[in-house]
Image: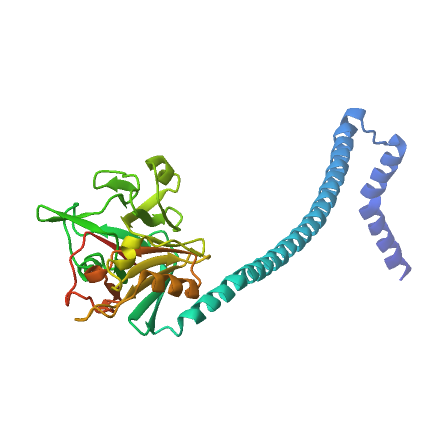
Length: 361
């Protein structure tokens, strides 16, 4: 047994001898490890760079966070401003609507007032260009037909010739049909010469003087038409410059002036008796620039029916108009409304005429 143990010990000693020798050698040389400064620099620089990168990254993240906060605050401010703008805009629209409604109220009340004097409309044409209301009235000596017209656009009314040049003539119904008008009425007087029918005195079409140009008013003649602002203009004019100041767009001439600024004008004796009673055509205007067309029937075998000019003046004042002008009457008086002849032309048929006032829808 002891022999076996000794033999084992010798074996182990032989196996460990190389390792023990190596250990003793290492201890005898006292090894040390030294790193040069050059060898350390890359590591220090790397560490420093890493630290800087980390700091910059953190700074960038911080700035991005600040930017995000600022952007959110800006977005909220913009949203508030937009909401304020929308609210303000809505409030301004309400104010504008209220103001417009209030501004229109006096006009509506005025329109109701003048309409009530005419009666109940028998027919109405209402479009983007105009509103035309037809009324009937029966007097002791004549029947009258009235059209109250509110012009809504510059091209709602015009005056046309009876053909493509002065001297031509056609009925008011033919003029209405040719130009596709909604309402038509005969306009100025005329003079016949060599088989042709010419407009009487100063006549303007599309802003241009025709028929020999401007002619100063003489006797009882006047000029009446519309200006560039769709206002009825009329009266006696001594010079072209005087009429030009009113910017006439179109117009014709006849006799006499009936009302001016609400006051009845003196009827010349000649027109009181030649004839006493007759069919009449009148164009007039209200304070709000609405127009009134008045056409009356007249004549019979006894010559006892029709309207005097004084009676027409009384009617106009009762209707509340401020300016009124007598147009060509007698057999020329013709009113067309919505494609139909409303009055009863005294010639038994419509007369061919050189000028017509037309209204368009």
